[in-house]
Length: 183
Image (cartoon, rainbow, N blue to C red; front, side):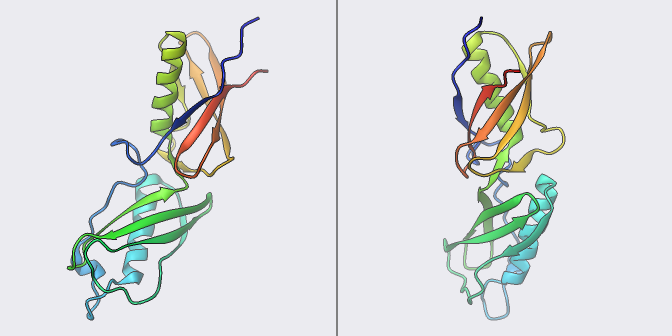
């Protein structure tokens, strides 16, 4: 009887260059500046909605950013809430300059499936010393909405057999643990 490997905790965060926690997106000043030199919140919300859908394939139901007048102040940062069919996301918006250019990124609720596959593959390879392939569904979409406690399955293959693993989200920033599923 083989010993059950312990649960391994990893993170698929936005800080990885290949991750799709939505790459920082610089928007043109014409899009986000109203006549009064304030952030055009309506346009920003539309841009975030389109960007998330185009970059992840995840349908966005709504985007809610603070509605108070926001003057253009370099390095001003605020959060917007995004509602998707898979659950909520938090987007951090930062004004790059006082001309209306901003960057935004998803900071909570999104996990990169590609990065999760890479991290699990590396951990298994290091633990058992063989090359494996991991599939968490990244071919269907590069990311998924996932929050603390959410569980999804991936498959691991060594070329001879394919086994399922359970991935459990440990936090809302992309941290997860995985373990083999035993029949």
